[in-house]
Amino acid sequence: MTGHFLARAAPNKMLFRPYLLGMVLLGIIAFAAIFLLGGKPVQAQGATDFAAWKNPQNAEAVPGWARQMLARDFRNVTGVAREELLARTLLALQDIVADSSVVPSTRFNAILAVGQLVSREPSLGNPPIAYPAALPYLVEVYRDPNTSDYLKYGALLGIVRHANIGIDPALQDKVIDMLLETVTTEFEPREMTLHSVPLEPAAWDWFRLTALDGLSALRTVGTNGKVVTELLSVINNQSRELEDLVESRYRLTREEWEHSRRFSELASKAAKTLGDLHYTSAMGTEATNIDARKMTDAFIRLTKAVCDLERKMAADTLESSERDSPSPNPVLLLERIVVNLKMCTQSVVWGIRSNFLTGRPPDDSFYASLAASASLDTDPSLDTDDPSIRRLDILLAEIIKLSTFLDEGDGTRRPVLSVNVPREFQFNLSELRDVLANTSEVLAEILREEEDAL
Image 1 (cartoon, rainbow, N blue to C red):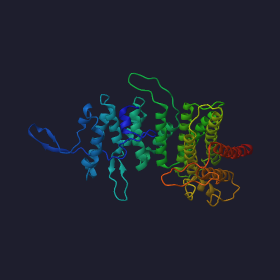
Image 2: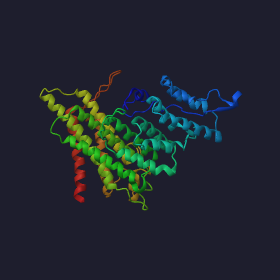
Image 3: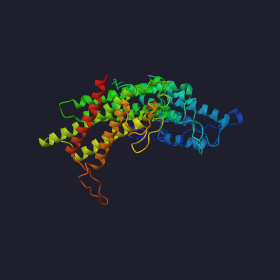
Image 4: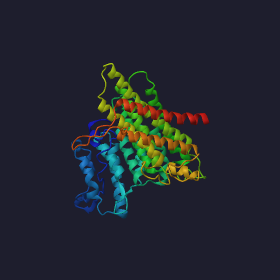
């Protein structure tokens, strides 16, 4: 899955975003109904020759051909003619995907092209409409255990695109279940065979993160709040992994550092996805399947776990320096810690408010819906006896204090501003370690209060 054809299609090392994502793909195969001697059809000028895609010598040209399809073949084609041409194009692409003798890069571009098929072109004020017949095929390819991993990922990208621009309501629950299964499935190593390369843990994370994109696009909490329930389990599982690393008596190895980054990134993306869902109907009297206490606990636990891990990294590095042991560059370490902290805290804020700290939470956000269910105003500073809202307010206040420190330090240092000189952090590792310890203690107290109340 990590071969050169995928690298060519997806240079982004984090999310494997294929380079076809911004292209306009696929079009009509316009066959002329002109018969010459012998009754043989002649292909119209400009029609796509899918047979040429299968030639290994043309593999480098296939991405460019895919980019040209929509502009050249589908231009100004509408109605029944478009539907007929879409159906023929889908069949041709399916044939390429299914042909194991075709080079992998071409098969990958073919499955990407399936996800790009549209029944209606985008126009001013009107988004495109995805080709409905493509979605069942993409789901079938993705769920087939015999499908190669790189084709599965291409199918997943197409499914997520359908989720973004419109999905058949009859297939929504099936797609949600498939995306949730992907997000909640932990990596399991597989043996190498003659015909396959085992998937790397980081590559499986691409699948899970991309599936979260699909859930974000669908916006729904799911039947009986199942989307929220499953995402909370992901956050708690990743928080547990981070907590295990924090409890280690030894300095983290490079591999453990990498694991911690992946755990934090997945949990943060799940938290952010929770903020993309619509809660208004789910929090009303007709449905009470969203457990506000469990959701609040998950946000607090994740924030604390990330603070504890980054504090451990800072503390271990300082101890190594005191013993003259090899240690990471403190400036680079500070940068890494700040990035991880901001990724986590901003995702948690979004998960709670469906907005940043500077904006008012939308009415269908978790926070506003929770406040409305208690007949309260949605002002985050509101003093209320509601346990979940009060605990969320404490969490948000701690995140604000931490974010201010990360941006400005403790206020005792005056930043040096100069042209073409990068701005330096207004704190050092020991100061950051102490601030994170204080933040963690406040969050731990919130968790202990809730446990005592149960």
